[in-house]
Image 1: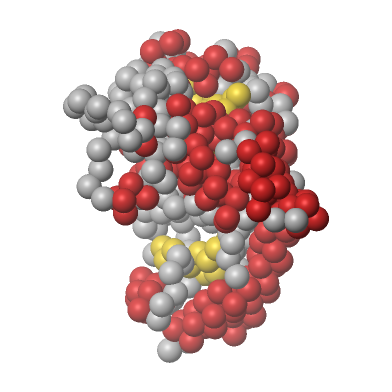
Image 2: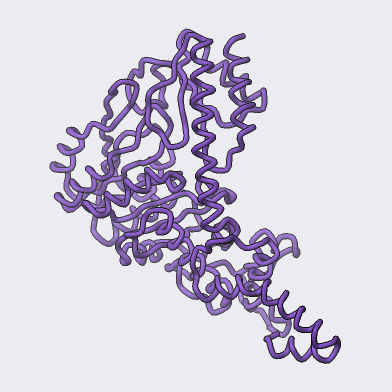
Length: 439
C-alpha cells in the first residue's frame, strides 16, 4: 500500500483535518523503517518493536513461500510445520545465501536477501561508528565466534595457502576447535607471568613468526583475568613485516572503547586481515551470530564463498534487529553503564578481599576482575555460588587449566560486569560471594 493509496482511503472516509493527522502518525511510524532500508546504517536512535515487526513483516512477505498462488514443488520450498515454527526464524523460511556463497541473493528469497544486505551494512556501520572506522567491509555470519574463526581461517587456507596458526595461549576451547575444523595446525605461543598478569611472550612470538612458513596469526583481545589482551598493534606490525595474515578474536571487545582503539591502531600500524566479534556478547542477541569486519574487502568475499550451503536467517535477523533496537545513542549509554558497573564491581571486590585476607588481582580487563581465593576451596565456593543462583563467575584452582599459563600461583574467582548487566546484579553477586567465601 503506497502513500497515494493511503491518502485516497483517508480522504474517502474521514474529514481532511483528521486525515492529515492520521498521515502524520503513519509517517512517524514508517520514516525510520524507510531510512533503514534506504541508508542501511546504524541509526542514532533505536527503532521501536512495532517498527521492527513491521520491517520484518514487509521483508519476509517478499519471499516466494508467502505467495498464495505459488505451486511449490521443490525439495525444500520453505515448508514449515506451523506458524510458530516459522516465527522462530522471523518468517524467513528460505534462509539466506546459496550453495557455496553465504551472501549471494536467493531467487526464492528476495526479502531475506535484502534483509541480509541491510544487516551486513548496518553491522559494518555500527562497528565503524563504535571504533573501527578504518574497516571497509563486513558480514553478519549465522554462526558463533569459534565457527566464524574457522570460516576465516578456511578462507585463508584456500586463498593464500596457510597451513599453521600461531596462537598466543588462551585456555579456551572454541578457538582451538575453529583452528582444527579449518584443517590447520595450531602452534601455541607461550605466555609469561608479569606481576599478576598473564601476557603473551612477544620474544617467543617473533621467533615463531620468523621461522614458520605458510602461517597465520590468531590474536585475542578479550579473555578472563589473569590473561590480558594481546598487544595487537605490536603483533600487527610483525605480521606486516613477515607478510603473515592476522585474525583478531575480538569476542566481546566492541563494548570497550579502549580495546577498539587498540585494534584501530593495529590496522593503521600493520597488517590486520579480519576482526571477529560476537553478536550476543556485544549487542545483546541470542547466541548464534557473529560480525566479521576487515580493512580488506576481498577477505569478506572469501569468507562468504567459504560457507557450505544455505544458512539459517535467524541469527542474522536477530543481529539486525538488536542493532536497530539499540541504536548508537543507547549503545553509548550502555557503554557508560558498563564502566560504572565495572567500577562498582572493583570497589566491592576490594572490600571483600580485605575482609577475607585476599586481594584483587592487578590485571587490565575491559569487563572483569578477579579476586584471589588462596587457602580456600575455590571450586566449592564456585559451586555454592551457582546453587545460590549467581551465574557467570569463573572459579579456577591454583595451577589448573584456565589461567592461560603453567602454574599460576593463585586460586581465584573471576566476576564480570559486561554490557547489559544491571547494578543490582553486581550488588547481589558480590554479596553472595562474600557470604559463601566466608562460611
